[in-house]
Amino acid sequence: MEYPFGQFRSAVLILSPPAPPDDCMVKTEEEKEVLVLLEPADFLKRLCSLTQTFVDASSGSQPDLNQVLPLASLEGSSTKTYSLAVIGLDAYRCNQEQNGWQPLSPGKQSPRSQPGPELFMTQQEILEAQVVLQLWGNIDVQLLDTWQEFGEHVCALTKAIARRPYKSQLEMQELSFCTAGVSGKGLRVEKDGTGLWQVWKRQIQQFNRVSPATAAAIAEAYPSPGLLVQAYEECSTEDEKLLLLSNIPVKSDISGKDHRVGPDLSRRIYLFMVSTNPDLILDLTV
Image (cartoon, rainbow, N blue to C red):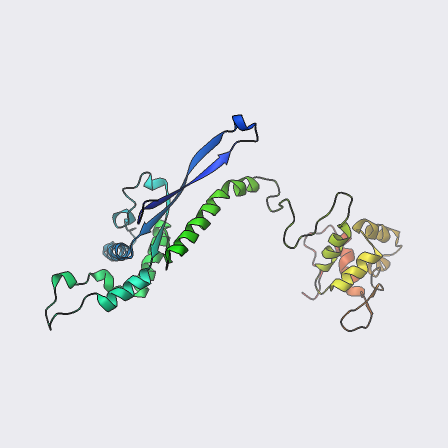
């Protein structure tokens, strides 16, 4: 990065597959993202020029963003994705309003103190110009108050770029949504089968209006889906299968009164376990 204001280019180091230390190869790849840091005064002048260019452009034509933004002179600007960062814009505008242009006498102003049109841009005009940048040029603008916020933004951008190869590789997998490891709300199943009962109980609890106590009662009566299917096969009639779970007692920790699973949930679980119709609606109250 060039200080105080310049261009930030990010690069990702991609290591080759594991090999002995002497044979380790490192590949440097330049990313397409470029972060441009602008001074508040320069940013306002360019926004004002952009607004004027957009007004003067014929209906339906796209404004030439390279003429008003510091992108045309950058190497490979046509293949890069840019974002702008401006530090202290609100403080700069406030300072200009308080200590900037002042009239020397009625009807007379000093040429040096004559403000530019960019200082008269309203907050609404600035927001509209940002929308033009986003829609026409896919250019995001970050308005930051301090250098610390800018440093945090650079760290977050670098981290996101560094994680991109991993995410791309993950999306190429057959089940990209299924990641290895333990998630925040997931259940771990050991190699010896420990944890399968908890997974079965969690699956039952996903039915509408099923409390943890009800799911635990069903899982205790039939500790696995296979055992429940086997119980269905042993039933002699369809009604017996539909009502198989209805009389299972459920201990309530809230009211202190025991109740039973009931015929409605028993029917829904049975249809879920044996039906081959993917469009079947299990819950009749929905």
